[in-house]
Length: 194
View (cartoon, one colour):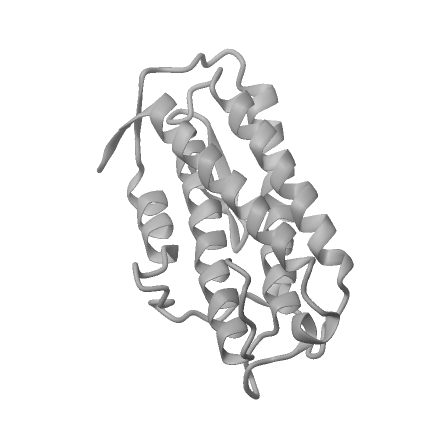
């Protein structure tokens, strides 16, 4: 399994989340009609994709916060070793370099937006969650991100390493922001970078 420098990995994740906040903030400047529009039947709108991401934040961020709070007895180590399952999940979520979403997957029921979901407040909630995620990454610098584990949302009896949980959550966001970019392109929206 891959071995990472813990602090460098956390640095990279902080930068990626900061970029995600900028992208989500840019989405707020779009007309509401574009945010609500699906590019084709059966495809998600921008707001539906953000809802999906926010549903994961709603599960994972409290669990991550609890693990970090209760993990103060396990101080940080220089290296993070990815786990077999966590590494697989993180890598499976990453989009292709050209913005393609590889490994199409069906969203679990608890993370699927309702048809026609169109609440623009989800963007504000998502940005707030990303700011919380930045704080949690900062807090994680003091704990052992290999030893501490978080239960996954689809099977709580399965736990993955805290470092892999961050990697998965952030890769999942990158995946769906590639989807958002493709949605905007299909809708003919120009002048915004996501």
